[in-house]
Length: 319
View 1 (cartoon, one colour):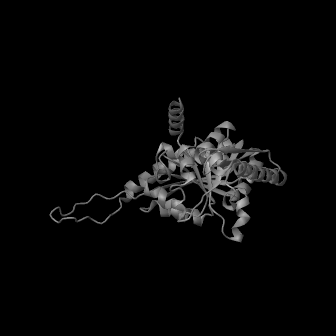
View 2 (spheres, rainbow, N blue to C red; view 1 turned 135 degrees about the vertical axis):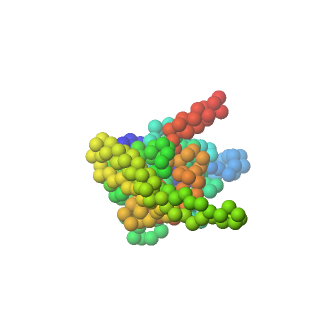
View 3 (cartoon, helix red, strand yellow; view 1 turned 45 degrees about the vertical axis):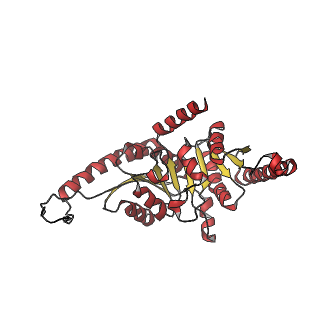
């Protein structure tokens, strides 16, 4: 279960949208919250004037302490805060290490679609460099969504792709499901196994129509279902959660995941990254399509191996 949540702020209403849901999670998990605001000056005190520089820092500190005070009184959770200076993504990840955070909660700054929310942004660097899970929330634009954005989750979906990396998302997804008392669904979408057939090799660029091998596809489904059922039983036995395991056959993997999420009122999708940025979350275009097409928050977890390698590399570089 999460014990320390970190919320990066930048004095924008959009960033503040993460506070409500993070507070709900912290209260449910009996966790603490740390607020961090990174001061990124456009120049040195000599460039902008010492008095102006000091005033800016004082304003940011007052803002941060004001949010912390409201959170303490409104959510009844333990809150700390820090104003730090430097490159935003680096300082946020560093602050997470300092306070021993186990989850970063933030709102995306999407402007051209959910699948492009990290392109060239601070969030992209955080996702690539953070050694802990990152809960990326969608911007709330309609009044009807505001209350839901401050509540706990109800149904968490974990897509599997058959790799051991995908299974690593189960841990943080389970933690959020436990705190929220949410249902958990493990979903595997498999492509139909094609039936081998002869085609005319004398005709250039002639491709035979895909004819599924029903027997082979059924066998792949059975194996996938057995694997997911075993994981579901283990999670249920350990945490007493309602866990469902589903296998769907479709050539359109990402749209099938999105359709399932919409049809079953999923309000959080948990995925494991491959440590190479947001476009490599599952299998290239599948992840990008999920990010662009889904309208629910995304919980991102870097594989443990990649996170350790990153930390070692960073330590070596610093030395």
